[in-house]
Length: 119
Ligand SMILES: [Cu+2]
Image (cartoon, rainbow, N blue to C red; front, side, top):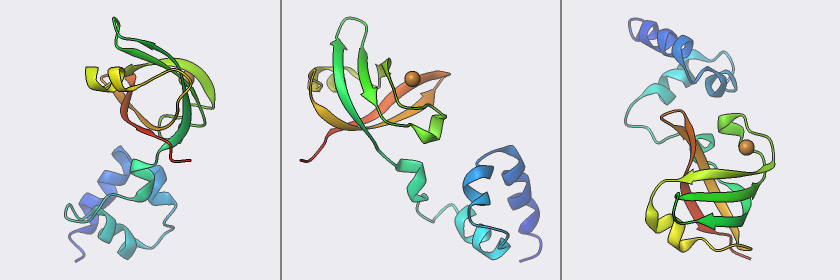
């Protein structure tokens, strides 16, 4: 058990520190979260509310008017994002209320998930 604490501490220093900081100083809790078999923390897959403003099939860009994207440190704004794939571009329509997940992929903020908002 004690041996396992060292890699956990290294992992904290190299990334994902903020989410674990929320768990407080309880190292036992951190151990639980670092296990590869455990499910991801909810914050890692959180969706943000957005509205599709514009779709550009040629460039694969979707302009979103979105709420805060906490995971990439982006405040609410209207901005064009790269879509993960062509199917996502084809399925998006201006004026549609959606929920999105944007992540930095190869340095570019990319929509990795886009679903219609249930109303
Ligand atoms: Cu932005």
